[in-house]
Image 1 (tube, one colour):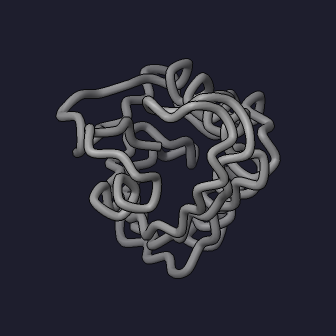
Image 2 (cartoon, rainbow, N blue to C red; image 1 turned 30 degrees about the vertical axis):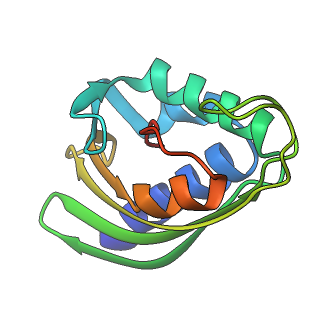
Image 3 (cartoon, one colour; image 1 turned 180 degrees about the vertical axis):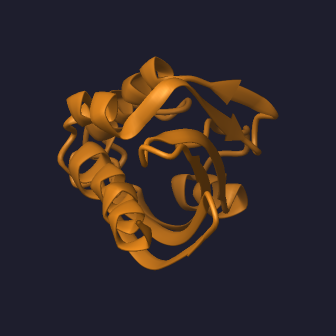
Length: 144
């Protein structure tokens, strides 16, 4: 199941974030999926994740999430990612539209999955300081 879980996690990067196909979340996430956002000290669900992806892709049309490394042990997958994009679209986190600011931000995701291989929980940590610096912001931002 290790290889299958890695593929399923890469589908979130490739199909959801990179291609904007949030419909695949229904196949990849278990009912009651919970995402923990370290930067905001709060949780979100699958619908909020889909809305975040859609809004982020409108602001960063060239958004790319690249998987650098994945480790699976028991019912847990950990992956290291790089998120890149150029702010060419909608307003984002207090930015006016299309500032041209570039992002290149490291991220770490920890997923828990059920026996069917569907993700039940996700903990996301990204370099919020790098995001704020690269976008020229001083306020805290939401997490992918």
